Image 1 (cartoon, rainbow, N blue to C red):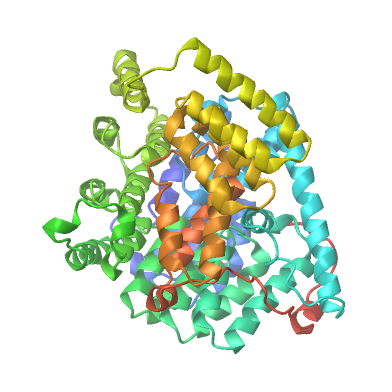
Image 2 (cartoon, rainbow, N blue to C red):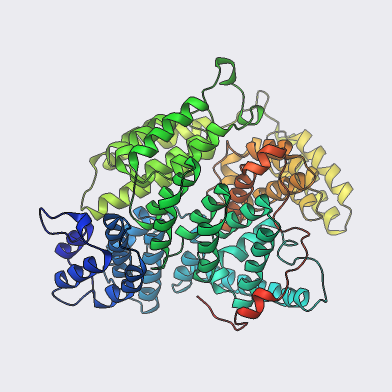
Length: 619
């Protein structure tokens, strides 16, 4: 049963009587008023779940914040029992991360009972952190997408079982290499994305690794593990994250713990964040907690965030000679990294103008964070501005632009509005034609038919040579085919795949780089083509970081900025995001390098694993 509009309005306002002082009552009083407003008894179950968190919250906490967080959680609980499919679809497009997860969970239940109608997936842009929820939803449907989702879930389950067997060998003393650290980056990302489906034994192993880093006072390793936990959103991690947030002496570690904790939809999260906010003093930590409150559904301290954005802009002011070169030619200073963090914490519609101004920042990472912020809080007026800059931003940000537009549209649908701007199909078609002209690549001297046939014959010979195991001969034939028809993308792409399969990453990247330069639109619009290309770049960057070449790794990742990677598989995109986040860690900036997470670490002890049930408890 859906939430009545009048009760929803009361929840959004904190259920305070007109003219009353919101700060005069504690959380338990708020729950009492909520029950009185629930005259039809439709929220009895949801309010009962909120009672433990409100009871444990001290009365000294900000009661308006407590009310807002409890109301946001009540809305998410109402989504999990709603039968309004159109509202759920709009939430999937324009809601916060936790609201999207709740809506997808309900759509999964409705799809299982054949109640939910099919939806056009081409219009949706999902955050990589939602991959597990999206796959569970798609697997309940029919068609090619459902079959692919079921196959992916089966593959992930097999991966989790294999990793658990290897973890048990490490714990029993039969192996010494960390099984998670030995995985490729996209497999590590898959394990984290689907950690809620893993056994408690595997979760305990991950927790024990973090505790070991804390005992060694390794700030860099602790921060890396907390960054990796963001995608997990597993309630079994909550006690550990809460202890780190409230007890760790390092503000950077506490900030990462807050970001990971905020992605868990649990009634114990809100009071923990409030207690941490009372004692937070460092600017970066306060910004991380503001982001956490926004993810939980209650934006706070907009004025402090505005002042922080202005301060970071002053710190990151560029000299006139620094505006032209690409991002890799300039070090990412503290101000630019602070801008990204502050924009990620932007959940208040009053600050959307600041995000609009920063969307033209010279740094592509700041541009990306600004566009994502506009998508989270922007109104209909931001659509025209997004359309106007579409042809001016790098191609790597076009996916973010589409996701921002979809999010704004979803919120407009929730309000029952249809922006007239979106009905102008002629303008949309003109924009597509401009993109085609921008990405088309003409050759000064086009090859003749004879050259094309020669290139085709050479590629057939290269394919046969690869089947016979003669990789060097196949690579040489690809070079000759590329010389015969320099505008054909297939020879360099085939060459990149040839060396990628045997682990020769430098030669594979050289081939993929040439293929992307020749036919970016063709390669970027197919998941099965762009995924191995991105996979190769991420693995090479991890290798460079392990060798201490952080600057080279950063430059390699900067090559991906001009490309729209939204069609790549979610685990690979998450691995790319983690790699960039690891390069941005304070310890990595101080040393100039970052070592890959967990790779080569010894296995953890038994202390944490013995406290956690080893059964297959799926959350």
